[in-house]
Image (cartoon, rainbow, N blue to C red; front, side, top):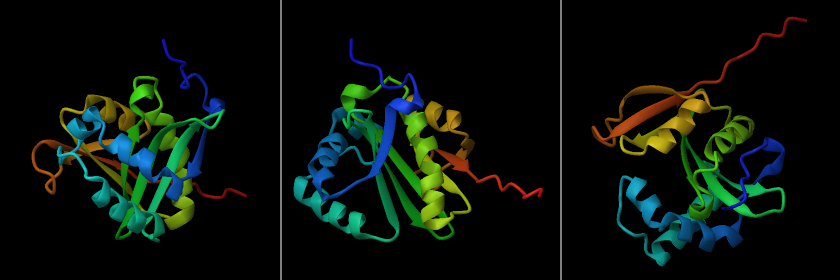
Length: 170
């Protein structure tokens, strides 16, 4: 049985993705379970991924973070893309670390980070109807389920998160 990193948040960290993560993220993206959960299930050619990654990592409209163990082991990734006055989120957990409860903490740890980067009015996630683990993770992270996603068809569930503004009572 593998080590569980989901026991406490103190065992987890996040760092911004760098050029050195390109191959790892390509491998994670082409994992069969990841492809099955994606709206486009075709494998991603390396050259296509590398061009895409180079563009995303340099874009002011994209932020990618890597979830790490307390020993620096990469456990998953989360990507936010700015869309208008909001952001869209995409997440994946390394195949060998799935089922350990890592997705929800990753979402919760990075929402304040993305707020510091862009101050989005909302964050949305498009999840396949058949991707029950991702749906549970977004619900646990405070996202609300909306209607199906028109952009992705009836097989998609839209999850929305909106920041709660607190008033200064001093």
